[in-house]
Length: 150
Image 1: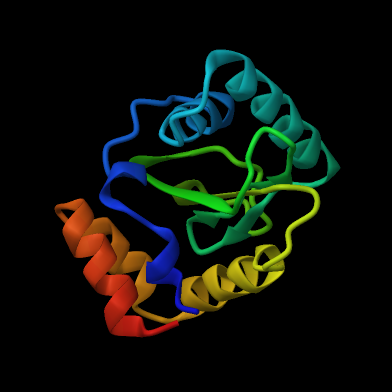
Image 2 (image 1 turned 180 degrees about the horizontal axis):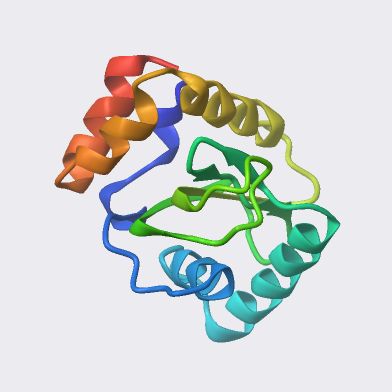
């Protein structure tokens, strides 16, 4: 299992329009292609998770995540905001790169925590934050995931 296996071009948003954390969450949720009611439920779940503590892990990266009945399999999305957003990250720096992870409550494949760990591992590599700012297309993003082989 590699990170690349979970992403498609449709869920890679390199120019988020959001001007706040809440707007960014909504924008990434909409990339998953759910119905409006499911999007609303998922947003509330992610907000609840963020209220427990920011998912901004530092180095300009956030990994909002939750489990929800609105999905029947693990879903991910990536968004970039070049100007950065206030995510109340642990290093108090703006977040530029957001990895969204959503999984069903009961997941037979049990991929939620391994994927969360892989994204955290990927994010901690020295060149990742700067390279994510340079990529110009979803294909380049997917290629970067493949290259890292995480």
